[in-house]
Amino acid sequence: GGGGGGGGDDGADGGGDGDGRGDGGEEQEEKRQICLGAVFLRMAPYLKMYHEYVANYDAAQKMLSQLSSSNSSFSNALGRIVQRLPPEQRSAKLDILLPMPVQRIPRYVMLLKDLLKHTPEGHPDRDDLQLAVAKIGAVADHVDEYIRKHQNAERVVRAGQLGVEATNMLAPTRVLLTDIHVKVLLLPPGGPRGRGGGGAGGGGGGGGGG
Image 1 (cartoon, rainbow, N blue to C red):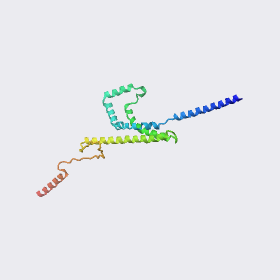
Image 2: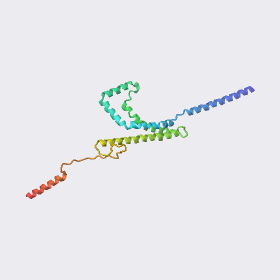
Image 3: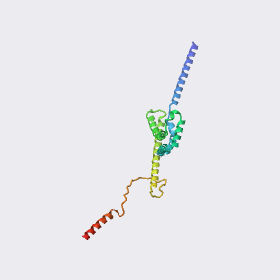
Image 4: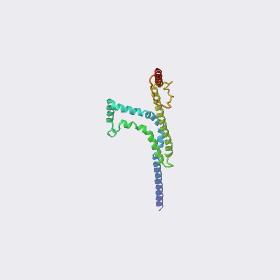
């Protein structure tokens, strides 16, 4: 009977070990929870490099269109590159791929906001997601501001090419505040007053002759 009691104790101990393994499994499961906020926080500073690509996107798209329609060597080279791709990727043309980096950061902002919306309070990723929304949003603002300055600089260059005379027109600190379209009317020699004066003089002369 004592031996049976000992066996019961062993069984109880075994049950305790089983519970311990269960607790460890829960811990492992918690560790396996997907946390993306920290990933975006680590990558946020590097995403600012997109500003150069985005600022030159319009020029690149225009150049691609021009070369594709006028340069057979360029078109043939693109065709050869496409043929080297796996069959499932050959439908991805360059004009379709070019805008994808432009759309990436705004999509990251939307993704993070949506993740935060569906992440409950107390979740280990919630605080990092809140920080990531702010960080990636700041990157998006940085890219937008860079594009604005880039476009302004291009307008200053065009103004200089139009013959606008100014000291240090292309200085890095120069900013174009506004541009105004002006219509210039070229009058004949003498202008309208000369024509009117001549008519009046002719009338007077005629009266004198009478």
